[in-house]
Picture 1: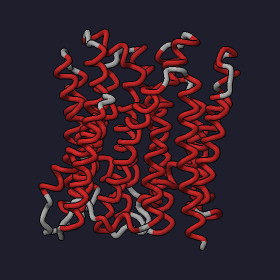
Picture 2 (picture 1 turned 90 degrees about the horizontal axis):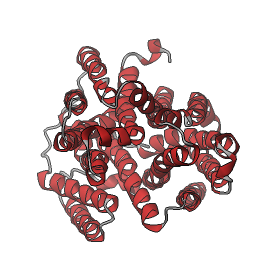
Picture 3 (picture 1 turned 120 degrees about the horizontal axis):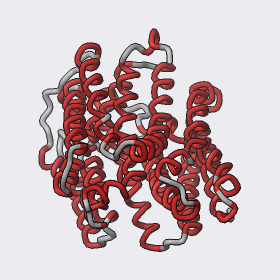
Picture 4 (picture 1 turned 45 degrees about the vertical axis):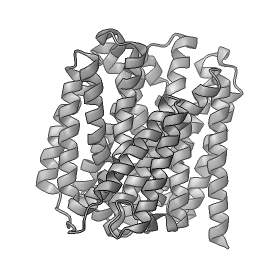
Length: 433
C-alpha cells in the first residue's frame, strides 16, 4: 500500500473494518471455550453471537444515515469508542448477562464503524484511487472474516478466548487518536432526522434477523410487516432515513441482492466447515482456523490484482466471474468424499472458493455505492452492510431448518450462489441492451 498516495485515511478505515469482521469470526472458533468458561447453556451461548448480529444489522441503516447528516468523523469516533469499551467489558465478563449485553453493545459500535469506513473512503478518494481503495476494502471483508477464524482459534488455544476481545482495546485507542488527528471533518446537514423511520427500521431488521436466527415464523412475518410500513413511510416524507432513490439504480439494486445471497452462502460455510473439521478430522480450534489459510492467502493475492483486472474487464464481469468460480468451488466440496481427509477433499476447493470470494467482495462493494451521490454515500454504505449482516442469519436458518447433512448444506449454498449468478447475468444483459 502506498501511503504517499492514500495517506492515513485508508489504513485507518481498513484496520477499523478489519477489527469488527475479525471479532465476529472469533466467536466461531471460540464458542465452545466461552460456553465452558462462563457455564453458558446452549441457548445462552447462541445469544453471544445473536445479540451482536441483531444490533449490528438492526442499527446499520440509522448509523449510515447519521454519518451523512452529523459528520463522518464524529460518528466514526463514537463508533470506535463504543466498540473499544464493549470489547474490554466482554473480555472481563463473568456472567451470561454481562457477556450478552456487551456483545449487543459491541454490535451497535460495529454498526457505526462498518458504513462509516466505506463512506470515509468515498469522501477521501476519487476515480482510479477510489476504485483501488474500494478493492482493498472489499478484500478486507473476506480476509478479516477468514483471519478471524485463525486468530480466534490461536488466541483461544494458546491464551484464552478473552484475549480475542481484549486485544481490540489498544488497537481501538490507536485508531481513535489517528482519527482525531488526521481525518478531516465532513459537512453536516441541517436536515431533520426521521426518528419514527429510524425506530421502524431497527424494529424491522431486528425482527427479521431474530426471526431467522431463532427460526420463529411469527417474528419473521412481524419484521416484514414493519419493514413494509417503514418503506411506505420513507416513500412519503421529505427527509427519509432511507432515500428510496438509492434503489432506482439497477447496478446498486443488483449489488444489494448479490451481497445478501453471498452472505447466505458464506456465513453458513464459515459456520459449518469448522464444525465438520473438528468432528470429522479431530481438528482443534486453532487447526480449524489454519484450515482456512489457503482461502485467505488466495483471496489476498486476488485482491491485489483486482484494480488491474477491473480496469481491463469491468466491475460487472469480474463480479459475475467471481460468482461462477465460487459456485465451482462449492460444488467440488459438495461432491467430495470427506473421508479422504482435508488434503484430499477440502484443500483444493478451499483455494477455488478463495478465488471466487476475492473476485466478488470488492466488485459487489463498489457496485453497492455505484454513482451514489456524496450526500448519500453513508446510507448507500449502510444498505450494502445491512445486506451483508442479514444475509448470514437468513441463509443459516434456512439450511439448519432443512438438513444437518454436511453435503446437503453445501448444495444449498450452491443454490444461493446460482441465484446470485442469474441475477448478475440478467443485470449485465439489460445493461448491454
